[in-house]
Length: 303
Image (cartoon, one colour):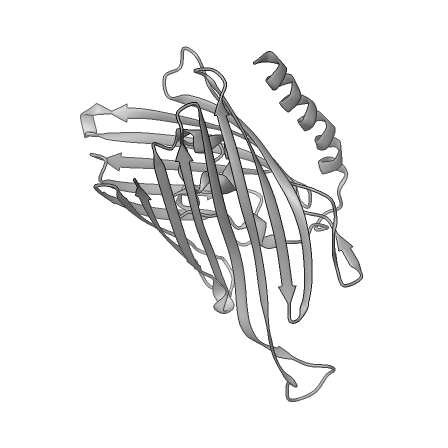
């Protein structure tokens, strides 16, 4: 166990200087920052340490170890300007270890093509970005889980493409003596530069430190989750994400999230409903601009 912890800390120490030295706004593949799963979005993206489901393939690969048997999550997201953002993921647990996979994609069509400052477009084109991720997690002790993911990245604009690979690393630690308290770290999108036509760009590497408190509220027949993440991206300043969830009788959940460090959005609201093995979640993120709000809907099932 000690050796595994030292390896994780060593990788983090090697990468952090690179994260700190990157230029503001230099990273590409911005769709990798958008988040998946309406529950996580409703919690303000503070999901690094929260008990996992199939969306943990995106947030922290160590979190997939919490899945019971098989979990499947599908998400549809409506963004402004007819942008669509989708996710489908699945995880299977084998007790002390778990495997998972997920595909996240962003696409938009019918963009006007112009070869110069012409009054009429010469045609239309589309944009399609996606990432396919395979994840593995293992429970090393009753307190410590670790995980890793390998990603295939693909970006297509019109008939031009860029391809690359990246890895995610994560760990979760259940703090002894504090029932329901979990601390976590995740290092996401670590990889070499990609190249689109002749232009090279960095991946959006993010280092996250998070904590989550999950406690029953017997007097109200429910359960309370409080979570927070500190996010240190390569192409921006440190951001703090905070989320709260109250779930009544394992049936209905209300969620609130707040983010600092973003120019045009901070608050998110969410609602979740459970019926037997099925979960239906919704989240809205208001944007303080003329672009409009964004909406996410997720469907989950545990088999």
